[in-house]
Amino acid sequence: MKKILIPLIALAISGIVPKVQSQCVVTNLGVNLKSFNTSTCRVIFDLSWEQEVNNGNKYAYIHLWTGVNYHTPVANWVNMYSNPAAYPKATDLVNSLGTISIFDNGTATPLIGNTYPPDELAVFPITTGISVIKTPLPGGIRERMTILNIEFVLSSCENVVSVKGDVWASQASNGKNVHCASQGLSFNLNNPRVAGFKICEPRSVTFGITNNDPATAITVYYNLYKDDGDEIFEPGAGSGLDGTPILTSSSINILPLAAYTESKMTYPGSNAAGETGSLWVEVITTVPAFSFVAIGKLQDPGCVPLPAEVLHFNVIKERGGVVLKWTTATEYQNAGFGIERNVGNGWNEVVFISSLGINGNSDRELNYQYIDQYNTKGATQYRLRQVDIDGNKKFSEIRTVYGEGQAGAMIVYPNPSNNGKVNIVFNGYEARRDISIVDMDGRCIRMLRGIVDNSIILNDLPQGIFVIRALNIETREQTTQKVVINR
Image 1 (cartoon, helix red, strand yellow):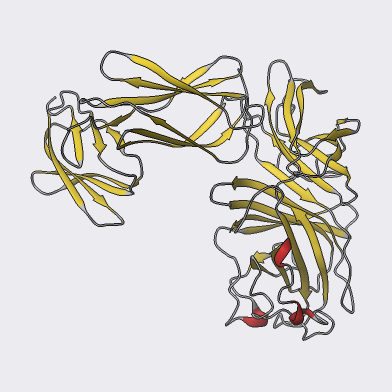
Image 2 (cartoon, rainbow, N blue to C red; image 1 turned 60 degrees about the vertical axis):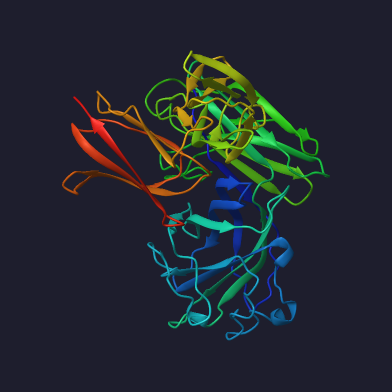
């Protein structure tokens, strides 16, 4: 089976109410949702919008809130943006998610600012890992701004996550005078959501559209676009844009907490050069009237099979059983995971855990856990057998846990090793460790930092006698074990 992962983009368009002497004309506010962990409420996304070209703008600022915290405390927002000095200060932004500053906003190459000039001592803008791109649009009077890799940890991420924001610009050299502003730019981070993949043979796509609202049905239709090669969604005819839709669907109704699946839909084109690049699925919500648009990017860098990307797989021995935990970054047509156990007589399936993704598809982190109520005096090995909907399978790395009565905080085996390969198993709960391999002269020949798995494999160790040291980063507790390597 051939398939490709897709990051999710959620885009929202809303009416903008001016509340200043002039209005910044901002439309098509969009969010490219790259990661959404519903366990930690950690979200990473790109923010984009269209604006009128104004070479006089030296600075632009974006303030974001969750919908329930928008413009709190309210008293501070009376006549906000109504005159050159009515810009938000620290007391106004106390309940915001964050502020983003854009310097040289009127030039062709704007950049992310490391200060908020209106209140430099009190407000620290988001700067880590983000960047900004400007794309001119045909006609020369509008342009699209995109800010990449904004990261927040939300206090709550159940059901539909609403975000509101203000955008304002300054033509003053000190960046403090309000030239124009737009308030109440609104979007949802996760509704509707799109998950799916591209199929190479036959030429088709499969994707799902999910309504995360627990009470309200939505009505949508979708457009399919071909990317022009820059991996940025820029619909419209003209140089540097993605063109017009190659397919447009009819109206689709999706009930609350339900999903619509488009399975193996063929699309026009050939297998010639340029025809196997990324596609964009644009899902437009027409009911309710507040217009949401969700975009899914379907990539095709060779159609590499990737039904599930496992970020972490850990196995922990606890009283009364063994706890297995794993996290997937993405899943596409994933049927689920078989948990397999080996106590020295071969691999046997313990249980099969179905995918938590909708129809086996997910573009966000999913967390799994299973408790195997099994005890033995010897060491026990575990692995995951991932199975996709077509029946293809692949195996995870092997994890090993202590047996009943085995002493010590760390086991190293085989010892001695005759091929330079050893297994390390840690007893107890999960921890983050630095592991070093030191020879008899005290020289460190290998260092592994920040290891979170409770069992790892070291390969290609040279011949000799070594000490393996494991340092618990949090408690600073150190465990050592001598190992002999024969070649």
